[in-house]
Amino acid sequence: MKDLLRTADLSRADVDLLLDTAADFAKNPLRATDALAHRSVAIYMTKPSTRTRLASETAVAHLGGTPIFLRGDDLQLGRGETIADTARIISGFASALIVRTFAQADVNELGEYASIPVINALTDDDHPTQLLADWITIREVFGKDIAGRKFTYIGDGNNMAHAWLTMGAIMGAHVVVATPTGKFAPDSQAVAIATKIASTTGGKIEVLHDPEAAAQGASVLYTDVWMSMGDPESERSEKLKALSPFAVTEKLMALTEKDSIFMHCLPAHRGEEVEASVIDGAKSVIWREAFHRRTTIQAILYHLVRGELSGN
Ligand code: CP
Image (cartoon, rainbow, N blue to C red; front, side, top):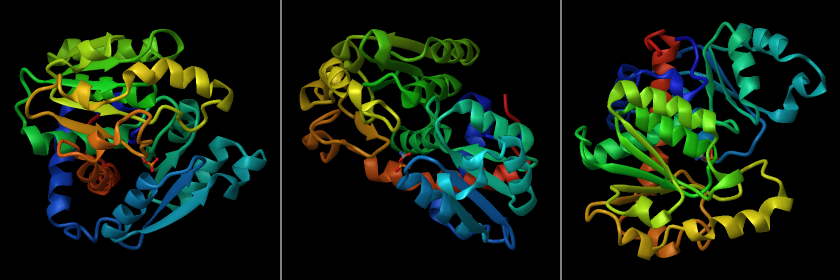
């Protein structure tokens, strides 16, 4: 496995290895400062980022390397240079490329033409690095035995919903996504991919449109901001109206298991997708989850650059 382009690229063995290494990096961030010594990692982002950028730059530094941050309009790519030529050039200067952009196809093309590992740091379709931070947090809270537990994402059927389903399937978990019907439901192809993976891992995939049924007996309630980067402003009022029954409230949390947790990839809009008393309450693990962005990206870089992930 050269690249991490999609959550579905990862095998269960890869995820276990990455989470174990990330746990080591959480305890001792500087245990592999020679891994990228005298090497650079390019971080190219055409969308804003707080956590992923900070996590990526600090992960590279903790591995002894130099991060080179490139904004969308910094490169000649924006003036017509091809993705293929850009990938070839970055490969001559850096040991890995972390990329955040809109189209999954662009990240796939970078992976095709780059000779170095390419890591998807969010596209319109997927967010694999986030899911590793989520699952190390879940593992810390509940341990490795997740039999009988239900993991629910509630809200917009976006890239996070897709990644939630896929990673849950890889982990053999019972995962639920609850969204409105129609245009804010998850992509049917993403659901099909997760369902196929779940059929080989013992996982269970459910796509529901009833927030209370989804929350009932859940160990995790997860949500994401309702207006994602790139969503048309013209859609705002329609989208917020459709999603309002899917807000994570105290009432919804009361339907979950006694030891349940609340998760959010952040940034959050308190009073929209989640009540402030939930996200800032005792069940919320959002800060632990956010700080695992660094430990998990550090683990991804460490193993991908060494060619130690097998892939699916
Ligand atoms: N969760 C996440 O990807 O955060 P940023 O958009 O701030 O990177």
